[in-house]
Length: 94
Picture 1 (cartoon, rainbow, N blue to C red):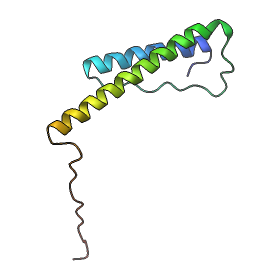
Picture 2: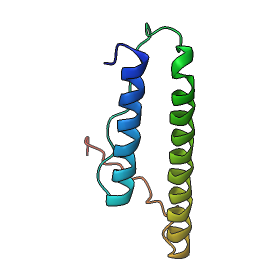
Picture 3: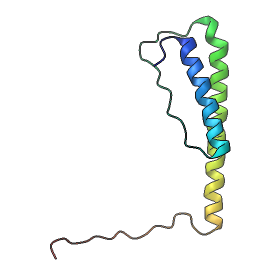
Picture 4: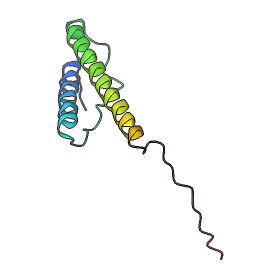
């Protein structure tokens, strides 16, 4: 777990790059970055970098949402969206 803001931002940037690779290559998504509860306030000298990481995170979220919507639309067009199977129960007493 990162101990300082520069370490945390390094980990967040690496995570964003790994998520980008996962989206491009279909690989599993990496684990989420955990922010330590005792990391303290963001130092002023890291503010610009943190804002860039935040902007990149929001862009990644938007791309994931765009792909999710496209997938749902494709499934709907193929007649597979929201197709649910009825629940089946087995009575073990019988």
